[in-house]
Structure formats: structure tokens, C-alpha cells
Amino acid sequence: MANKNASSQKRQSTAVPAAAQNDAEKSVVFTPKAFDPNQIVTVRNGFQGRLVYKSKKTGESFIWEEFGAEQDMELSELKSARSSSKKFFINNWFMIDDPEVIEYLGMTQYYKFALSIDDFDSLFTKSAAEVEEIVSKLSAGQKKSVAYRARQLIGSGEIDSNRVIGTLEKCLGVELIER
Image (cartoon, rainbow, N blue to C red; front, side, top):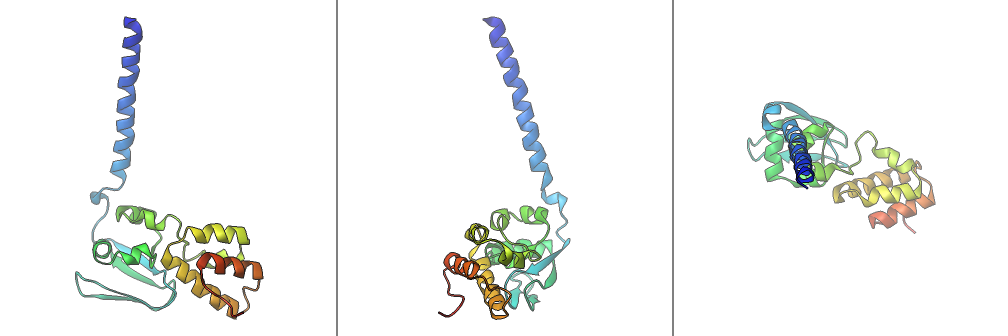
């Protein structure tokens, strides 16, 4: 019996350092020291239209004229925006290509299912089932952007599938074409 207890204690004691080592590796990845607060981050407009952010910290205005337009912002400014204007992250109006920056800012949960700017229009080429699955996971801000873009593409004739239009209307809760 003494040998069984000794060997089980030995296994338990080796398991703890391995778990602690994994936790230590995870916590080292995104420490404040890993990022310079003056680091420049390219932020793209995830809003279908003109987007304006006015810094509460410096008073500086950042203006994106159209969907996908880019502005360079300091990481410290993004941290300030996270505190004072969280809706820009929640609605995916600020699109940041670097997932490490998003995680550093603590905004991963808002970008988990977000459509990237470059892949935005590819949503409309998918099957109705795929569209329904993707749209159901989007933020309210991205759903509005999808509806706006869908109206544009329907108007230009680029989306003409009644099945995709019907699925988009159902998922978004909006009317995209007059009936």
C-alpha cells in the first residue's frame, strides 16, 4: 500500500508543475511589456459608411470615410477607446487585423465570429445554410453592415438568388427588397 500511495503522490506532484508551466506560458504571451503603448496599429472601418471616433484622451478625431478605410492609431489610444467607447469594439466598427492586439486589448470575445473586411463580400456567395450559420453569430453592428451591403449588391444585381435574399432577411430581421 505504501508504494501505491507513494507512486500516486509522485504522479500528482509531476502533474502540477506541468499545468503551472502551461499557465505560465499562456500568461507570458500577452503582457503589457510585450507591446509598446506608442506602437502604431492600423484600424480599418468595419461600419458601412463614414465612421468618426473622437479621442476622450487627446481630443483628436479619427475619420474613416468608407467601409474598409484605414487609420493608424497608437495602441494607447485604442486602450483609451476600449474604456470610453467600447461600442466601437462591440459592434466591430474598429477592425484590427492583428489577433494579438485584439487579445491584448481584451476584446477577443467581440471578434470571435467577425467577418474580416477582405472577406466581407464572400458571405453573399455562400449557400443559404452557410449564410444563416455565419450571420447568426455576428455582432449587431456587423449584422447592420451585412444588411446595408446586401441592399447595395441587390440593387446592382450582384445578389439575385431569392434563397440567399430570403435567408438574409430572416437572419437579419430586415426587409431587403420591396414585395
